[in-house]
Length: 138
Ligand code: TYD
Image (tube, rainbow, N blue to C red; front, top):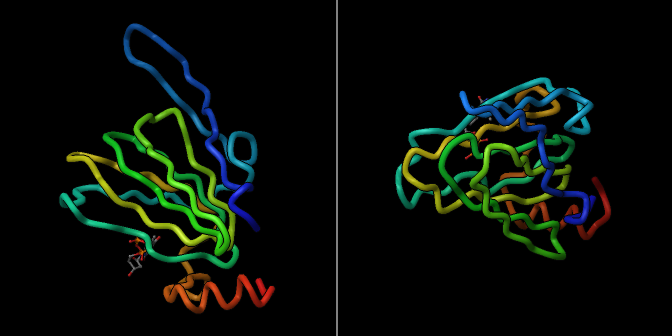
């Protein structure tokens, strides 16, 4: 998997003077079945989240409110996405190291995930992640 697999997905937007609406359907707007939803909120200023990779997990990250930056790294290339619109989702493929920084006050980061929480799917150690990326094992 490579950074080029990660991309911003333009989610459907129903614009309405009463308030806008966005929806996300598993396997239609995201390329996986959604098994889990979690969100980060009340993130203190200066705090950083993430700093891990996943072996198999696919995710879509949405800034539901406020803004933050997502730093992606496939072991070869790095890219930063500034998230500040609730109708864009960042698709993150497996085998990508990610870090979330620069949370604005009141930011809410929602994550749709392709599987339940499994600690065994995580790379918590960057050098182990790099070893597997460059060693070719998944
Ligand atoms: P973690 O994924 O490390 O947080 P982040 O990368 O966003 O900084 O998760 C933090 C803690 O929460 C960790 O102890 C595992 C737990 N957790 C769950 O129990 N279920 C979940 O779905 C997630 C995402 C985390």
